[in-house]
Length: 229
Image: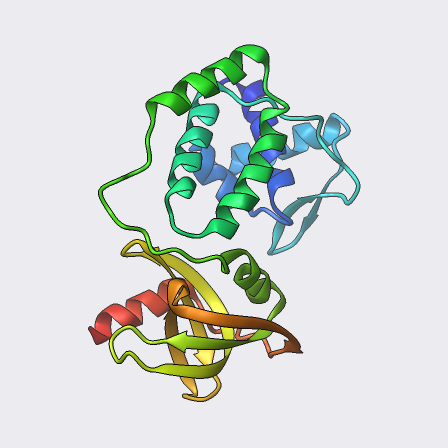
């Protein structure tokens, strides 16, 4: 990759997150940390307001924005693939949110890229081999996770066929067996529990905040879960 292209992509990467560590940049472009430091200095010398914090990483100074980014063909094809997955993943709120995002992104495409998108969209189909379980709460529950909001749910358990009311602290989401799964801390059971979104009969996002659980980590959660099974 030419250095000019790499500098542009580093700048885009810096804008994508609040703070970026040098190691993350090095791993993405398969370059040394020394090269990362040199590239950052080059961008700073060119007038890009890049700040740094010892032990944390680099960041773009608040208020600086890049001009609109144009997508290449591989990125457009990835967007089509994502659209096809979301069309058939089961949650209508996610599909609605993605469609809104997609309209904004497509408005930035060149005419030939729009043609390319439409052609590829006709040639890639979502899976029709599985029955996806439907839900409409994913968008709201993502907000609850982000803001640490307690959620009250009426839940119809699959295996016991029982209906119960729970007050939960939503912590994470994953897609499994054609359904979205919500990982939460149940205030009744005083333990982590999983809830299939399509089995939630009713839900209410409350205005009550719960204390953040900094020790909760999805990777560690799945490792512990696999060890138990």
